Image (cartoon, rainbow, N blue to C red; front, side, top):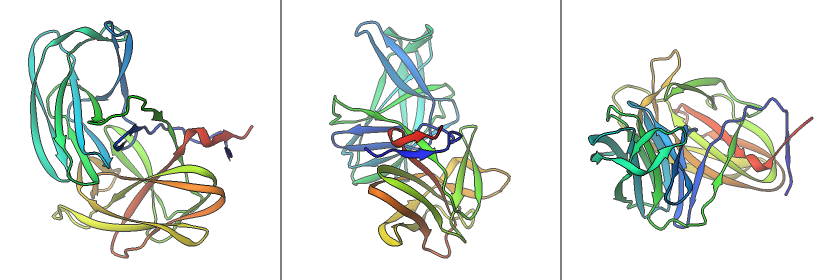
Length: 291
C-alpha cells in the first residue's frame, strides 16, 4: 500500500469508526474513551465518556437497529435519564443504575451494570445525537444489532487542506476543533491513494428560527466530479462558533475511498446561499511522517 508523506508537525486527532456487519456508526470528532475491566471475562471494555450536559453525535449508515449501552459512576442504586435524537425526533430514555459486580474502571472506579436502549432505524442513513441531561457523567457504547464479532476500530488523523477560504473554530464538549470554509475558495489538496478520506461537514444557519436546512457539496478528483453529497442540517445544542453568535448544525460524516495514484482533490460548496464548514481526516495507516 502506498504511503502518504506528510510533515511531522501534522496534528494527530483520532477519529473512530465502528465497523459493523450491517453498516457503520461514524462518531463525530474524537470523544474521550473510558476503559473498564471485566473480571469475569478478563476483557477490557471501551466506552465513550460523556460528561453531564454534553452531547455525543454520530451518523448511522445501513444500520437496521441501534443499541445504546450506558453506565454511570455509582455505589448505590440510582435512576438516570438521557435524551436521544434520531433524525430530529427526540425521546427521553430513563434507566435504573445498580453497581456492577464484575466491571470496574482500570483505576478501580465503581460503575453500574450496563443498561441498554434499542431503537429501530428506518432509513439507510441517519443522524443521532445523545444528549446527557442526566446530571451524571455517562459511559456510552453504540452498537448495531447484527454486529460482526470480528469488528475493528480504525484510527484516523486530522488532515489540513492546502487551499481554503478561512479557518473557523468550533467549540464542542469544551474542546476546540478547526474547520475550514469553502464559501469563496474551494477546499483543495493532493492525496496519494488508495486512502480513505473522511469528511465532516456542518452548516452555519442563516438565522435563529430555522429548525432544519438542506445543503449540498461536491467532491472532485482531478477536476472531475467524483461524488455529490446531500445533507439535512439540524441545529446543534452544544457546538458553537468561537467568538460568533451564529447557530451551527450537528456534524454530517461521509467516507470516500480515494483510488490509487496521486490526485488533486477539491471540495466545493455548490449552493451559493449556504455557508458550510469542513473538517478532514485520513486513515492513520496511510500516513508516513517525513524525517
